[in-house]
Image (cartoon, rainbow, N blue to C red; front, side, top):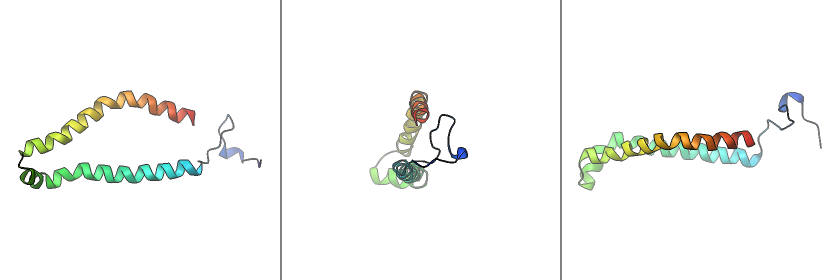
Amino acid sequence: MPRRPENMCLADGRSLIPRPVLVRTLIVLALTQLIGWGSVGLVAIVGRQMADDLRMDVAAVFAGNTILYLVMGLCAPLLAKTFQGSVHAW
């Protein structure tokens, strides 16, 4: 196995060069993040039209985003520990 340059390794010998599977996974996650957050922000632009089409109150349409952010904020501390553990395992 060829030796890696010292500046490309961590102190315990693990490589800083990501594996191809990891790179593909990160690219897919980045694209889904762009699409996902774009659709969340879309409600601010077309909320009134959505309310009219669905025959709902505008406040009810925006309540969906409010609930999304509330649940996300409540889950973040719990998920942070999981993500930190997976980063350190890599």
